[in-house]
Length: 110
Image: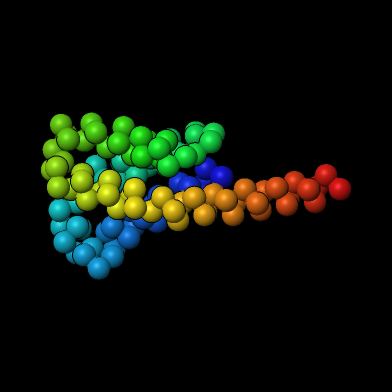
């Protein structure tokens, strides 16, 4: 379940950099966004029961220290907004992976 969530988070980060305004974001993006994405993925993998509030808290907690490391407020706001916007996609991805894991477990039990 968490693996699907982390993949979706990375996908939304990729959209941030490669989407319609990607060129503009690429120019202003710094090394911190890659680090933050990896940390967010790690935290999502650790999460047992992922909810929207927990997802938002993880993003906020991971991104907060980067303000003092040279990231602009605009970059951080855009990055967090893009990640938080994808909660519905992450939720559906995790639900599919849970259903798949349950069906695989039932097959192996039989």
